[in-house]
Length: 305
Image (cartoon, rainbow, N blue to C red; front, top):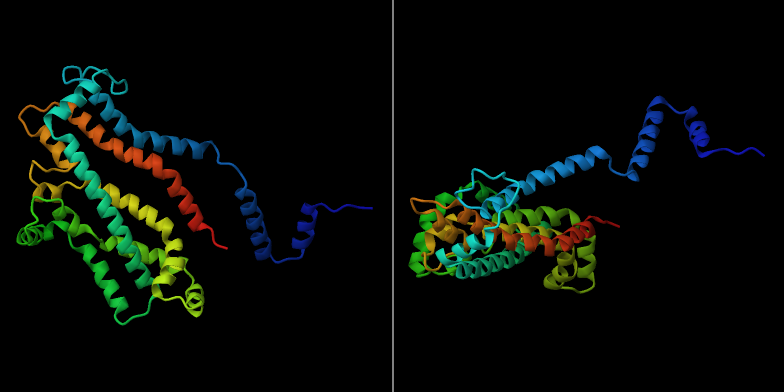
Protein backbone atom coordinates (compact mmCIF):
# COMPACT_ATOMS: atom_id res chain seq x y z
CA UNK A 1 0.00 0.00 0.00
CA UNK A 2 1.48 3.34 -1.05
CA UNK A 3 1.37 6.44 1.09
CA UNK A 4 0.93 9.96 -0.26
CA UNK A 5 2.46 12.77 1.76
CA UNK A 6 0.75 16.16 2.12
CA UNK A 7 3.51 17.74 0.01
CA UNK A 8 2.92 15.26 -2.76
CA UNK A 9 -0.81 15.92 -2.54
CA UNK A 10 -0.23 19.65 -3.01
CA UNK A 11 2.05 18.92 -5.98
CA UNK A 12 -0.59 16.67 -7.55
CA UNK A 13 -3.31 19.25 -6.91
CA UNK A 14 -1.38 22.16 -8.40
CA UNK A 15 0.31 20.23 -11.21
CA UNK A 16 -2.46 20.86 -13.69
CA UNK A 17 -3.35 24.31 -12.41
CA UNK A 18 -2.63 27.55 -14.20
CA UNK A 19 0.54 29.56 -13.38
CA UNK A 20 -1.53 32.16 -11.50
CA UNK A 21 -3.13 29.46 -9.35
CA UNK A 22 0.27 27.94 -8.57
CA UNK A 23 1.65 31.32 -7.51
CA UNK A 24 -1.38 31.89 -5.28
CA UNK A 25 -0.90 28.46 -3.73
CA UNK A 26 2.77 29.19 -2.99
CA UNK A 27 1.88 32.53 -1.36
CA UNK A 28 -0.74 30.81 0.78
CA UNK A 29 1.75 28.17 1.92
CA UNK A 30 4.38 30.83 2.73
CA UNK A 31 1.85 32.93 4.70
CA UNK A 32 0.67 29.89 6.64
CA UNK A 33 4.24 28.98 7.49
CA UNK A 34 4.96 32.51 8.71
CA UNK A 35 2.00 32.66 11.10
CA UNK A 36 3.47 30.23 13.60
CA UNK A 37 7.10 31.21 13.19
CA UNK A 38 8.91 33.11 15.95
CA UNK A 39 10.36 36.61 15.42
CA UNK A 40 13.97 36.62 14.34
CA UNK A 41 17.06 38.40 15.60
CA UNK A 42 16.37 41.47 13.45
CA UNK A 43 12.93 41.96 15.00
CA UNK A 44 14.22 41.71 18.56
CA UNK A 45 17.16 43.95 17.69
CA UNK A 46 14.92 46.69 16.31
CA UNK A 47 12.60 46.46 19.31
CA UNK A 48 15.55 46.64 21.72
CA UNK A 49 17.01 49.66 19.90
CA UNK A 50 13.64 51.41 19.95
CA UNK A 51 13.21 50.67 23.67
CA UNK A 52 16.67 51.97 24.53
CA UNK A 53 16.19 55.09 22.43
CA UNK A 54 12.84 55.78 24.11
CA UNK A 55 14.06 55.22 27.66
CA UNK A 56 17.41 57.01 27.39
CA UNK A 57 16.02 60.58 27.78
CA UNK A 58 14.32 59.55 31.03
CA UNK A 59 17.47 57.81 32.25
CA UNK A 60 19.61 60.81 31.26
CA UNK A 61 17.28 63.11 33.21
CA UNK A 62 17.61 60.87 36.26
CA UNK A 63 21.42 60.80 35.92
CA UNK A 64 21.62 64.60 35.80
CA UNK A 65 19.05 64.91 38.60
CA UNK A 66 21.16 62.66 40.83
CA UNK A 67 24.27 64.82 40.39
CA UNK A 68 25.03 68.49 40.82
CA UNK A 69 25.90 71.44 38.62
CA UNK A 70 29.54 71.19 39.68
CA UNK A 71 29.89 67.62 38.39
CA UNK A 72 27.31 67.74 35.59
CA UNK A 73 29.94 68.09 32.85
CA UNK A 74 32.40 65.66 34.39
CA UNK A 75 30.35 62.52 34.91
CA UNK A 76 29.41 60.08 32.19
CA UNK A 77 25.70 60.53 31.36
CA UNK A 78 25.03 56.85 32.08
CA UNK A 79 26.05 56.54 35.72
CA UNK A 80 23.77 58.18 38.32
CA UNK A 81 25.11 60.00 41.33
CA UNK A 82 23.89 60.03 44.90
CA UNK A 83 22.23 63.44 45.17
CA UNK A 84 18.76 62.72 43.79
CA UNK A 85 16.97 62.84 47.14
CA UNK A 86 18.82 66.03 48.11
CA UNK A 87 17.74 67.66 44.85
CA UNK A 88 14.20 66.35 45.34
CA UNK A 89 14.06 68.02 48.77
CA UNK A 90 15.24 71.25 47.16
CA UNK A 91 12.35 70.97 44.70
CA UNK A 92 9.87 70.50 47.55
CA UNK A 93 11.23 73.60 49.25
CA UNK A 94 11.32 75.76 46.12
CA UNK A 95 7.77 75.20 44.80
CA UNK A 96 4.38 74.10 46.23
CA UNK A 97 4.94 70.63 44.80
CA UNK A 98 2.23 68.71 46.66
CA UNK A 99 -0.46 71.30 45.95
CA UNK A 100 0.54 71.36 42.28
CA UNK A 101 0.56 67.56 42.18
CA UNK A 102 -2.94 67.41 43.67
CA UNK A 103 -4.23 69.99 41.18
CA UNK A 104 -2.74 68.05 38.26
CA UNK A 105 -4.25 64.77 39.44
CA UNK A 106 -7.71 66.32 39.89
CA UNK A 107 -7.63 68.22 36.60
CA UNK A 108 -6.29 65.29 34.55
CA UNK A 109 -8.72 62.79 36.08
CA UNK A 110 -11.81 64.96 35.54
CA UNK A 111 -10.81 65.82 31.98
CA UNK A 112 -10.07 62.16 31.15
CA UNK A 113 -13.39 60.85 32.49
CA UNK A 114 -15.35 63.63 30.79
CA UNK A 115 -13.62 63.36 27.41
CA UNK A 116 -13.98 59.58 27.31
CA UNK A 117 -17.67 59.69 28.32
CA UNK A 118 -18.78 62.48 25.99
CA UNK A 119 -16.62 61.33 23.08
CA UNK A 120 -17.99 57.80 23.33
CA UNK A 121 -21.58 59.03 23.35
CA UNK A 122 -21.02 61.44 20.47
CA UNK A 123 -18.94 58.94 18.50
CA UNK A 124 -21.67 56.30 18.84
CA UNK A 125 -24.30 58.79 17.69
CA UNK A 126 -22.30 59.85 14.64
CA UNK A 127 -21.42 56.24 13.79
CA UNK A 128 -24.72 54.38 14.23
CA UNK A 129 -27.62 56.79 14.59
CA UNK A 130 -29.45 58.32 11.65
CA UNK A 131 -30.46 61.97 12.09
CA UNK A 132 -30.68 65.05 9.90
CA UNK A 133 -27.42 66.94 9.46
CA UNK A 134 -25.26 64.13 10.81
CA UNK A 135 -22.61 64.28 8.09
CA UNK A 136 -22.49 68.08 8.11
CA UNK A 137 -22.00 68.18 11.87
CA UNK A 138 -19.23 65.60 11.63
CA UNK A 139 -17.47 67.69 8.99
CA UNK A 140 -17.77 70.72 11.27
CA UNK A 141 -16.25 68.78 14.18
CA UNK A 142 -13.33 67.67 12.02
CA UNK A 143 -12.87 71.22 10.69
CA UNK A 144 -12.33 72.52 14.22
CA UNK A 145 -9.16 70.43 14.40
CA UNK A 146 -7.60 72.75 11.83
CA UNK A 147 -7.95 75.79 14.13
CA UNK A 148 -4.79 76.36 16.21
CA UNK A 149 -5.38 76.32 19.96
CA UNK A 150 -3.45 79.57 20.37
CA UNK A 151 -6.07 81.50 18.37
CA UNK A 152 -8.75 80.81 20.97
CA UNK A 153 -6.76 81.66 24.09
CA UNK A 154 -7.70 85.37 24.27
CA UNK A 155 -11.48 84.88 23.68
CA UNK A 156 -11.46 81.91 26.06
CA UNK A 157 -9.71 83.93 28.75
CA UNK A 158 -12.28 86.72 28.34
CA UNK A 159 -15.10 84.20 28.76
CA UNK A 160 -13.51 82.69 31.87
CA UNK A 161 -13.03 86.19 33.29
CA UNK A 162 -16.66 87.03 32.58
CA UNK A 163 -17.76 83.93 34.49
CA UNK A 164 -15.39 84.73 37.33
CA UNK A 165 -13.52 81.45 36.96
CA UNK A 166 -10.01 82.77 36.39
CA UNK A 167 -7.62 81.49 39.01
CA UNK A 168 -9.68 78.36 39.67
CA UNK A 169 -9.36 74.77 38.52
CA UNK A 170 -12.70 75.05 36.71
CA UNK A 171 -11.15 77.42 34.18
CA UNK A 172 -8.76 74.63 33.16
CA UNK A 173 -11.28 71.78 33.24
CA UNK A 174 -14.39 73.23 31.56
CA UNK A 175 -12.89 74.17 28.15
CA UNK A 176 -11.57 70.62 27.68
CA UNK A 177 -14.52 68.52 28.85
CA UNK A 178 -14.83 67.16 25.30
CA UNK A 179 -12.45 67.27 22.33
CA UNK A 180 -13.02 67.09 18.60
CA UNK A 181 -10.26 64.50 18.28
CA UNK A 182 -11.96 62.27 20.86
CA UNK A 183 -15.28 62.41 18.99
CA UNK A 184 -13.61 61.71 15.65
CA UNK A 185 -11.51 58.87 17.11
CA UNK A 186 -14.49 57.11 18.70
CA UNK A 187 -16.64 57.59 15.61
CA UNK A 188 -14.02 56.03 13.34
CA UNK A 189 -13.65 53.08 15.70
CA UNK A 190 -17.35 52.38 16.30
CA UNK A 191 -18.44 52.74 12.68
CA UNK A 192 -16.83 49.40 11.78
CA UNK A 193 -16.69 47.47 15.04
CA UNK A 194 -20.46 47.42 15.73
CA UNK A 195 -22.60 45.62 13.11
CA UNK A 196 -25.85 47.35 12.25
CA UNK A 197 -27.62 44.00 12.55
CA UNK A 198 -26.71 43.82 16.24
CA UNK A 199 -28.30 47.21 16.90
CA UNK A 200 -31.41 46.20 14.97
CA UNK A 201 -31.65 43.00 16.98
CA UNK A 202 -31.50 45.00 20.23
CA UNK A 203 -34.26 47.29 19.00
CA UNK A 204 -36.41 44.32 17.99
CA UNK A 205 -36.01 42.99 21.54
CA UNK A 206 -37.49 46.25 22.84
CA UNK A 207 -34.34 48.07 23.96
CA UNK A 208 -34.39 51.86 23.76
CA UNK A 209 -31.46 53.99 22.61
CA UNK A 210 -29.82 54.22 26.04
CA UNK A 211 -30.11 50.50 26.73
CA UNK A 212 -28.83 49.68 23.24
CA UNK A 213 -25.80 51.87 23.84
CA UNK A 214 -25.14 50.35 27.28
CA UNK A 215 -25.46 46.72 26.15
CA UNK A 216 -24.10 46.91 22.58
CA UNK A 217 -22.10 50.07 22.06
CA UNK A 218 -20.30 50.42 25.38
CA UNK A 219 -18.76 46.90 25.52
CA UNK A 220 -17.53 47.23 21.96
CA UNK A 221 -16.06 50.69 22.65
CA UNK A 222 -13.97 49.72 25.71
CA UNK A 223 -10.66 49.14 23.88
CA UNK A 224 -10.86 52.52 22.15
CA UNK A 225 -11.99 54.15 25.41
CA UNK A 226 -8.89 52.82 27.16
CA UNK A 227 -6.57 54.23 24.48
CA UNK A 228 -8.37 57.57 24.38
CA UNK A 229 -8.33 57.80 28.17
CA UNK A 230 -4.60 57.17 28.34
CA UNK A 231 -3.77 59.76 25.67
CA UNK A 232 -6.16 62.29 27.21
CA UNK A 233 -4.63 61.90 30.67
CA UNK A 234 -1.14 62.38 29.25
CA UNK A 235 -2.23 65.49 27.33
CA UNK A 236 -3.94 67.03 30.35
CA UNK A 237 -1.02 66.13 32.63
CA UNK A 238 1.59 67.79 30.40
CA UNK A 239 -0.50 70.82 29.41
CA UNK A 240 1.39 74.03 30.16
CA UNK A 241 0.19 77.03 28.14
CA UNK A 242 -3.43 77.39 29.25
CA UNK A 243 -2.85 76.60 32.97
CA UNK A 244 0.03 79.09 33.00
CA UNK A 245 -2.30 81.82 31.67
CA UNK A 246 -5.40 81.18 33.74
CA UNK A 247 -3.96 79.97 37.08
CA UNK A 248 -2.01 82.11 39.56
CA UNK A 249 1.37 81.03 40.99
CA UNK A 250 -0.34 80.24 44.30
CA UNK A 251 -2.61 77.63 42.69
CA UNK A 252 -0.51 76.01 39.92
CA UNK A 253 -0.48 72.71 38.14
CA UNK A 254 2.64 70.57 38.27
CA UNK A 255 3.99 71.74 34.92
CA UNK A 256 3.58 75.43 35.66
CA UNK A 257 5.14 74.98 39.10
CA UNK A 258 8.18 73.29 37.58
CA UNK A 259 8.65 76.29 35.28
CA UNK A 260 9.36 78.42 38.35
CA UNK A 261 12.49 76.32 39.01
CA UNK A 262 14.24 77.93 36.04
CA UNK A 263 12.89 81.45 36.31
CA UNK A 264 15.99 82.94 37.99
CA UNK A 265 19.30 84.09 36.56
CA UNK A 266 21.06 81.00 37.91
CA UNK A 267 19.51 77.70 36.86
CA UNK A 268 20.28 74.58 38.85
CA UNK A 269 19.74 71.95 36.15
CA UNK A 270 20.08 69.10 38.61
CA UNK A 271 17.16 70.47 40.63
CA UNK A 272 15.12 71.24 37.49
CA UNK A 273 15.53 67.71 36.13
CA UNK A 274 14.85 66.25 39.57
CA UNK A 275 11.49 67.99 39.43
CA UNK A 276 10.93 66.72 35.89
CA UNK A 277 11.64 63.14 36.98
CA UNK A 278 9.28 63.52 39.94
CA UNK A 279 6.57 64.79 37.58
CA UNK A 280 7.13 61.83 35.23
CA UNK A 281 6.83 59.15 37.93
CA UNK A 282 2.97 59.28 38.07
CA UNK A 283 2.79 58.73 34.30
CA UNK A 284 5.15 55.75 34.54
CA UNK A 285 3.02 54.28 37.33
CA UNK A 286 -0.07 54.76 35.18
CA UNK A 287 1.55 52.91 32.29
CA UNK A 288 2.63 50.04 34.54
CA UNK A 289 -0.80 49.71 36.19
CA UNK A 290 -2.96 50.22 33.10
CA UNK A 291 -0.63 48.67 30.50
CA UNK A 292 -1.82 45.08 30.94
CA UNK A 293 -5.50 46.07 30.94
CA UNK A 294 -4.91 48.30 27.93
CA UNK A 295 -3.27 45.55 25.89
CA UNK A 296 -5.90 42.98 26.90
CA UNK A 297 -8.63 45.42 25.90
CA UNK A 298 -7.04 46.02 22.51
CA UNK A 299 -6.69 42.28 21.90
CA UNK A 300 -10.29 41.68 22.98
CA UNK A 301 -11.47 44.37 20.58
CA UNK A 302 -9.40 42.90 17.76
CA UNK A 303 -11.06 39.47 18.01
CA UNK A 304 -14.07 39.13 15.77
CA UNK A 305 -16.13 36.01 15.56
